[in-house]
Amino acid sequence: MKTIIEPFRIKTVEPIRFTTEEERENILKDAGYNPFFIHADDVLIDLLTDSGTAAMSAKQWSGIVDGDESYAGARSFYRFEKAVKDITGYHFIIPTHQGRAAEKILFTILGKEGKSIPNNTHFDTTRANIEYSGAEAVDLVIEEGKDPNSLYPFKGNMDIDKLEKFIHETGVENIPIGMMTVTNNAGGGQPVSMENLRAVRDVLHKYNIPFFLDACRFAENAYFIKLREEGYGDKTVKEIAQEMFSLADGCTMSAKKDALVNMGGFLALNDDKLAQLARNILIVTEGFPTYGGLAGRDLEAISQGLDEVVDEHYLRYRLRSIEYLGEKLIDAGVPILRPPGGHAIYINAKEFTPQIPPEEFPGQALVCELYRFGGIRAVEIGSVMFGKKDKKTGAFIPASMELVRLAVPRRVYTQSHVDYVVEVIIEIFKKRDALRGYKLTYEAPMLRHFTALFEPIG
Ligand code: F0G
Image (cartoon, rainbow, N blue to C red; front, top):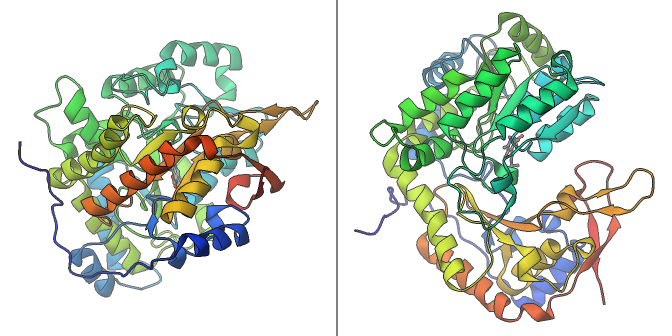
């Protein structure tokens, strides 16, 4: 086997700034021990997110210059509409400034008190938009998806029996829509099989419940299907993606992931009445339907990105580079969520630092140490993000897993950057007994992880 190489060469570079451990200790303190408050210039390797952080291609940049900035009916919109229709097959394509804007529009129409919306695992913005509408967001991922050590190939799948039970208990009239997130970001970037998408579609459609995909990482999911699901090895990724979309009635999409751009998203769907309602809200909140919340140049970059993301040399490199990071950590005994996901490696902080109880945020402790020791920025996906307080007693309810996500931006870092990340994590792992927990000193009522402030304990 030859080494799987980056299928591009680098034409433009962006220097990164080196800082000392002492400087980083002060920066961390000033940031309230929340990496969201660190200036990006003070970060050496930024694995906070794979969202909006992709390096665009020369063709995407030329599209930026070529963008048609007309208010209505811009050429760039028609190119965008054609590119999205080509992959999704949906009739109505509504551009939004990012994924959560599509979610906001969808749940403004469909969500309200008394309604419940199932998903494999809702991403935090999806959950927040649903809850903001008054509805309830329900996660029905399979049990394997909650076990960090299970090697099941499609840990993003939904439990079909749980879905049937949920529909019976909730009542069809209270379920305006069902969703599936591909890949399942909050569950470790794990893929969903075509078989499971088909089964979810069959159940939802049996009860006339519309089925939508949260399609942010559709191409990575499609490539996992090609690699792992029987009958798909000889299909192209584009054909697999088209089949995935054909099973659903629409999708929300953050183009900041698998459309390889820095900003953008869309809502795409087949129902003309729903599309009309969505466009009416779009005009109030985002803009005229041929640009939504975007400039013509953004629409050009998305159109080109959708073409590039289904390239199989790209996807082979993409999935392999994440797996490479995962393998090196596994070899060193570092506990990670297995198997590696499509866009990120998730360190299992509960096992990494068993001395720190969930209420002292083991993931946050590790995130802070990654920055302090190595200048690496990652994000906690554990009890800071998903922990709750019991409404009556105020008692702490931990998240189901305490994870630290190392999300890899697309086409940005090389193998030596990844090797550096591995070295830093292994060093911290050797000294893990010295890590201590954190306590919250400020939290916002919703999506608290973005703005929370902390203090180290002891
Ligand atoms: N759905 C999923 C599965 C996501 O991962 C995200 C964003 C969104 C929806 C919202 O899209 O950011 O364009 O509004 N995820 C980013 C992340 C923020 O870091 O995982 P958006």
